[in-house]
Image 1 (cartoon, rainbow, N blue to C red):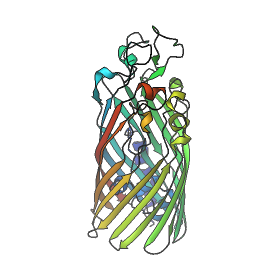
Image 2: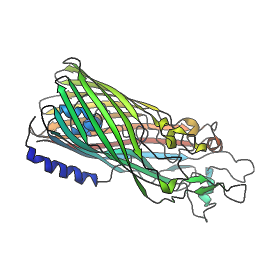
Image 3: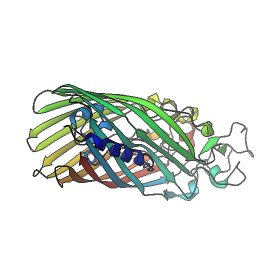
Image 4: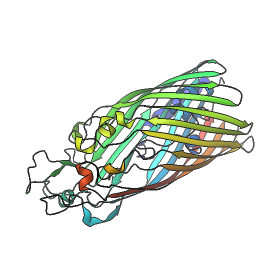
Length: 429
């Protein structure tokens, strides 16, 4: 596991170049990607206790202690289909509904996004390894031709300029990592999460000066669809333990990523758009010398982020609930050079039905993912891999029984389905 240490500058240069690549806007497990890297993405994102390649240090930093010197890169594409059908009654004293009921079902105009990851691992000694991963942190985007609200469609309160029709949020992270392997049966690791986020939207906010018609009950957010960038930091720790030659277990915990506040959008959010604290456990079962079965359970604490889950929409949040995530995968080696993978990932929608209207521009409701992948070893040093996934359509309807946004947007329907894939290259040096 030694390798040529003179290769390290080239690895670092490759990683630095990857930082400049725009990352995908994803919404699969809430705002988070369901998998990272082409190997894990073939197994439903599972494998917290299985060291397949360097990108796994983003999931569990302890896995760096079970890898040699290597560089992994993957490039991909994802295609989400999202629709919104705004509905709702006419509020008392209003001449028109609060929701833009006239436009019917709309499909988001932006449908294709880049995806991928890049990571390296490097052994400083038999017991100590360092590495870093540049990965998409998640996010999401919609852009509709018409507004969600009637006032936004008419430009009411904004000199006739339509608003409340689009939002984009993108996260990415760089995770410098150190891993320690004190024995053949245990590895531990820690990562600093260096986060990047950009955001823009023309969403509606309530008009604080509204006292009744003819003034407008809503205005466009003061950010006015201008791009704003902020940065964040967090910490992740993990461990892997071999209970027997057939069974390994793992555990991770993270503070999430704590971001600066979006100053231009203070009227839209009650606080910063942090990525949530989370923790997870995983197991690998080596069913045979050729077959690994992996299973993970994670818990994303959206309710700990005030602007996302800590408050209801009427108080400036979005009403998300905490989200358990279950992932199951299998890897089978058909020969010394060829392996195949399959997996499943499930996370219930973090958006309750009674906040669907408030979340109609960000329908992060995907639940099931079905995945497959394969790897071919070109040589002892080079591997090429591919993975693909499909996430079936999820539909949610606001019953109109929640706060004022739900009551005025009752009957609103949002849907999403997704598919995508990646290709990757792994170099052991």
